[in-house]
Image (cartoon, rainbow, N blue to C red; front, side, top):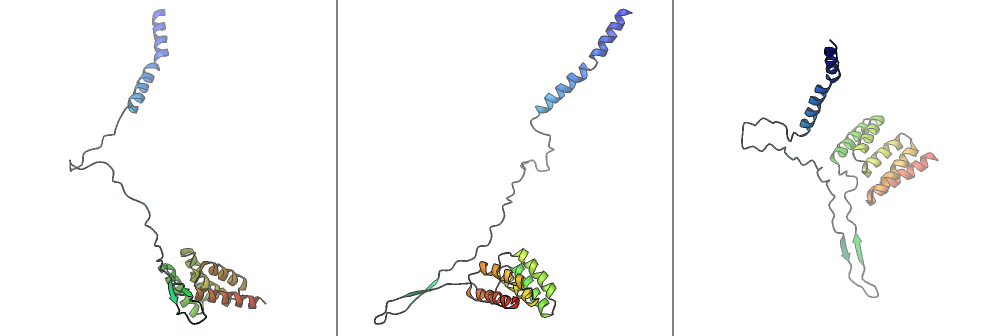
Length: 185
């Protein structure tokens, strides 16, 4: 009986050994697997590699650069010949962004109907669409001026002024700055 107990005790002590060996072998063999089974498609000649898709963003539209127009005047007596360069600015007050243009048009309609708050909200949305468009700043500044919010009108006009070189737009923005200064007293 003593022998059976000792054999039984040995089996109890080693009963964990077999599952551990089997588990270890499975872990090692799982690491050796080179590829997973993929069932063949209907077309045996089809390449099973994944497609490569180009997800690079489309290049942003760049503004067209045009050479400045050089005008020369004929030399007159006792006068040097000068060359005048006239800068070629885009049309004053025309937004290049079509989404911003639609929002500006909607805001102008809202302003014409007397709903200044809705027009201001629409123009603030246009600012999120085109944050570097001086026309949006001009229109929003003019609405803030109409609402007698002179400080914000001046701030918006100054921001628009920093974004444009167009003389017509600069003059309109400067006019808002001047009017807001008069309004504040």
